[in-house]
Amino acid sequence: MTSPEPSITASPAASSTPDALTSSLLNPKAVRPISPAPRAKHSPSPSPVAKPTPAPNATLSSAEIAGYESYPPEVRKMIDLALSLTSQNLDYKYGSADPANGGMDCSGFIYYVLSKSGMSDVPRDAREQYAWVRKAGNFQAVLAHSDDTFELDALKPGDLLFWSGTYSVDRDPPITHTMIYLGREKATNHRIMVGASDGRTYKGQSRFGVSVFDFKVSRAKATEDNRPGPAFVGYARIPGLPGG
Image (tube, rainbow, N blue to C red):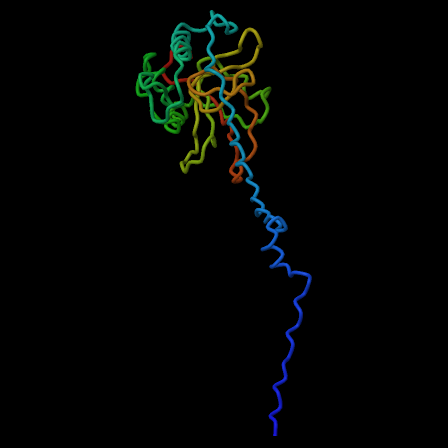
């Protein structure tokens, strides 16, 4: 008996259409280029906001003060010394009471000018200077918020001016700032003062250091942390100043 012949299964005919892989191997040009991944956009850092630069220290001569020639000699001597310091380009320097340090703070300016003008026992700190004039009975409180208040009728050139709230401090009384009243400027008839500050104005421009400044009673708005803004509290004759 003859053994049956094994059946031969025919292999399927090769497809006449090459698949994608074969096509890419045979024809490299058919390969689509791979697009690079998009780069993350770089956002430039915002430019820092420049703080306004204070204008130069303001100075003027005594001849620019209305009625200066009629001031008592002792008051003129003190004001002349104070004005001479405004021409030395002195900074506001906390803790300094000597122009040789390149600057002074507000009470240091008062201490230096009054001591050099012959006043004795002048306190160094603004709060102590306030207590000094209060004890002498020379203080005039100002409760108004306007510059034309009758409470300024007794204000004289050479008087000390006092503020509270110019910076945050825990003290009683809360006096933080002091200056010397000069009188009225001839050209504008505006009240002016002299001293050391880190941000008051003269003729609408912020000044920094030992300078002449505008004197205004108007109170500033509350601060961002809801503290009361700076407030003018009053003025006083300088104890022991002849003609003051």
